[in-house]
Image (cartoon, rainbow, N blue to C red):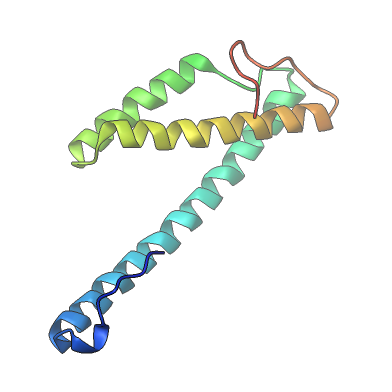
Length: 120
């Protein structure tokens, strides 16, 4: 969070009210994003256990490429920078792969990391 030298007591009350309304919406969206990510990771944990049981590699580069292309298209239609969306998804994918590697190690179904993936 950043601070500003602007004193809020000199800001027009209508502006302060609008700012508060917008920030409330941002807070609600942030909460929804956190809950959606939690649900996503619950699913990917199940995928990790399934992969470990069947000795599948933690990473699936073809699936990752497909998802990145899909997300870039979604971002473009939503008027969101597709490069940002790709960076965000790559961050999530790296975390998922790391979880899958740990699950594989913990269940004794350890597989080697996918080529080019350190897992961290």
